[in-house]
Each structure stands twice: as C-alpha cells, then as structure tokens.
Length: 245
Image (cartoon, rainbow, N blue to C red; front, side, top):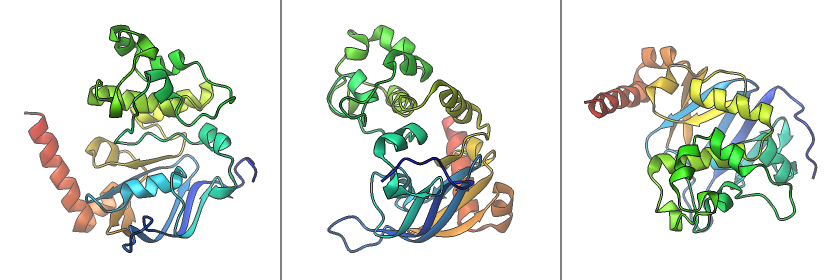
C-alpha cells in the first residue's frame, strides 16, 4: 500500500458501490456511482435510512464496500495508508461518536501511537471550543463521559470539527473552515444535509432513496423537476420556519 498523491481531478469516486452490514441480508447501498471533483461541493439528500451516513462512512474508510470500489484522489481507497488518509480527508459526522475519556483523547481519536500529534489546543480553538475549554474543570484533560454525556449538542459538533482539523496542516485547515462556515468552493466537500442554506449553495445535489441514487442536479433543476427532492426541501422549509418561531 502507498500514500501516493492524488492522480486525477476527482477527489472521491464511487464505482458500482453496494454495501450490507455484516450478518445482514439487506443491501443498504446498491449500484452507487458518484464522482466528487476536486473543488466541487455536493450535498447528499434522502429520507432517514436512505444510506447517507453509510455512504460517508465508506468514503472515510470506516467500512469497506461489499460491492464495487471507492477511489480517493484517483487511488483505490484500500491503497491509502490510514495516516495519510487522515491528513488528506477530514470527516465531520452529524452524529458524533465520543467515548469515555478526556476531551484531548477524543480530538486525537484515530492517531496511532508514535505518530506526530498536532497542537490540540490550537485545533480546539479553531473549532470554536475556546470558550468551552475555559469553563471545563480540567480544560482538554476533562473527562467527558460515555458518548460525551457532559457536553451539549453544539459542543459535541465542535469536538467533531476539532477531530477533523487535527489531521491537517494550517493551510488546509483554513480552507476547511472557510468551506464549513461559508461554503466557499476550494476544497471538495461532501455533505449529508437537508439544510436549505447548504442546498442553495452547493454545486450539485444527489438524492438517495432506499440505497440508490434516484436524482442528481442543481437545487434549481431538482426543484423544477418536483419529486422526492422537492418534497424533502419543502418539508425542511416548514421545519426551519417552525424552529424560527
């Protein structure tokens, strides 16, 4: 295996990807073909259980596909050293898995023993955790409990962002933050979201239904076409309006 630099202009490519969880018969994803080009932003949309999170987990190599292949930077995913993969691809899940340990250990999750560690205080501050650290009894060395039970939802998301930023250099860190907070389109970004603010600004939206891609296009194109995307978008519109009351 090697950690060679990307060899094509695609950041992520899925070719005929199918996936089922071990010990189960149902395919969670089937026949998924998707290309995320360098510098492109793509949102994955679908009902609960459509396979959005599983797709992101495959890209992050948390799982291996049952069928087909995943390429990262034009290189088959299995050829990437995990340390190199961590430095090139940051993942911020919507539901953050936190374990019963210190905040520092959770930010450094995924780093191997002996591997050079980043400045955790720096990445925590860049992720917006500075004010939170000031209120915690032992700062980064505070134990956060099983699944981060002592943290708020927003704090858990900031820990997830710090975990992603911990694996990149300062220049890449700045670009990731710019993308996450303003959706500028320099890095490639793959989102699983229903938020209108994101859907209106990404380059392309891909609609998943029962593990298959059923539509792909710009927000404007998909709204004009009606169907599942339009239904999901208008439902989210109502939810956000109610939240604003």
